[in-house]
Length: 90
Image (tube, rainbow, N blue to C red; front, side, top):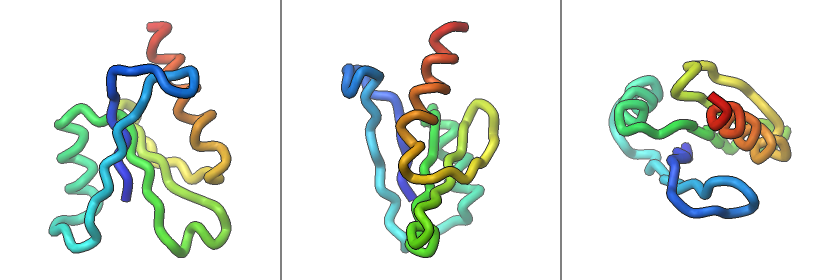
């Protein structure tokens, strides 16, 4: 599981993200991990499971919408840029 959190610098034309890799032996359910990082202010979680990578799919969780969406790995950047741009227009 990778967590993406806001970082302050510009990278690839959008805000840079800090990637936190969670060790597979960490205790707690996936939902508990989502809640913990939501409280820390992490905007998105990108869940990468080896079995999902066989077909190129990953799961993206949004803190603000609490939606979990399964998307192709090639669409992650566009997905995140779209949501961040929309948040900047509020």
